[in-house]
Length: 411
Image (cartoon, rainbow, N blue to C red; front, side, top):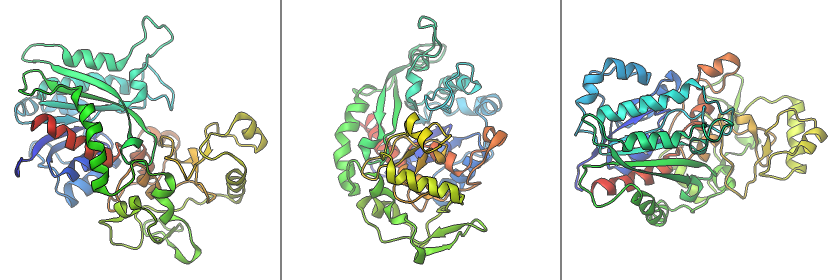
């Protein structure tokens, strides 16, 4: 393969989890990334554009957050000029409208972004497509089973179809659990691969998933981590110790703490390139005395790793419907954009942003920008640090996916 790097575009890029994984392969070079949220783009820009110089950003596109509708409208000719120059387009539309973790609404305006995604692909026509979305993307919308929509079917059929100056793609998709690839979190996502029908390769889109499984063992051996690290493997060096408590470097009147000694191979990997003794974004939430007492009782008396039952919620007077004390000996359930869904396994508090990032395999030298949290009506507009992480693709999976995608091109 030599020193040649394959070129890709990241759509709906978020804070850059997938792009970070592609960066670590040493094989892929970003051309540009499209992300609507100014908060998420600020994190991506700092870590991947400025710090790691990962993107060859074009002069015609301002280096800022963009709505895909605006890009398609303003820069149609520039996008069309990328044909035959782009090896890969990655990313999938925001998942909130499809997610079974929230209210699945067929009329959610974010679902219309699927059509914009198809339009972008038809303009640029990359050799390969890597599309990711939530498990709910494969499930039917609506109560009427004959009329309900399955958005994965729509995307597959639209990509396969030939059209004017559009050759179509060989497409295959399936569900993948990221916890099988070294990520300490049970996170199942729909992955779809498309290979342009005129691209000269003996491999097909379905082969990607077989190659992914074949590559898994050597990838994790080279990383020197377990195949399924648990929660304790991920975050036990970030516990609160009185002698290590300090003022938070980025938040007045909040506390943080210094690192403890690493206790697992996973922690060593996450800390490998970060030399400070103070973790980034490791600010502890200020809980009320009542909440601390409640969390202490729940940690002691409820089953770890399982949501509280209705009976338990009544017994302990817990109003929140979905809450669980995490199990230190297992990968966590899928983390969401709501950090108060989960209680730390041995300390009466929710997880910090850095602990959240560890569960998504973001290395400790990846710094998050913007607010820590938001609420009320601002939740529609703002994407704070917890949400940036909850929406991301784990970089560790992005890396093994990037290595496997390169095999489809460099056969």
